[in-house]
Image (cartoon, rainbow, N blue to C red; front, top):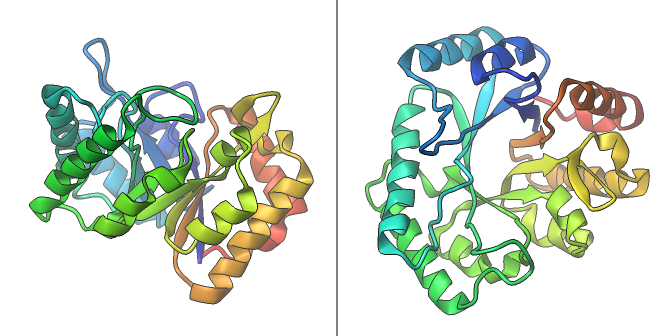
Length: 266
């Protein structure tokens, strides 16, 4: 079954006003978190309590997107350990919420198809970070959904399989990097707990779904429907967009042109 969701930044406001606005409109909200020396949007206990109330009132779940600016594959041990500590802190912070999955970036050293100047060493560091994150049993491996990024996911798939984590299949990233979308769906949808869907056009992603050619959209949604027919596994399909206009046009497009996918919603 498919739970349809979007991000916590549809409105130009903090997380709570966005969730209050989206409650009743979607099944899941991706809590897009960030934390730096300059700013942080990590919710306090009062906000977490209200998020829990909204979830109960509207049958919402949350996918928690860990901050982007942490580096589990860093060669600097202080940076790598800080990344693991950040994951743990956010897991503890959101423990009282109905979290569907934690979206995890196995962050490359830089954007592109080659994730590191020293891929074996980078993979070793990722290996250590995953082992440390899971060793205390604070989160089940299947609750961690490693996202497809700019590099070929085959590079990290052995780690995903070794630790038996789930996958976030970001089909928009696949389209943007011009990887084989059909092959990505074939190999990754069975393990996917979350899918990210957003428009891609002119070298830009995270646009309205209307920006993506209908043929690409249809192929992905049909693959998702086919996988659902095979395993009946509950998944979240997140419209990963950041704006009210993009949310409205994307929702209208799904309901008008691809209504069959909404029939899968739980």
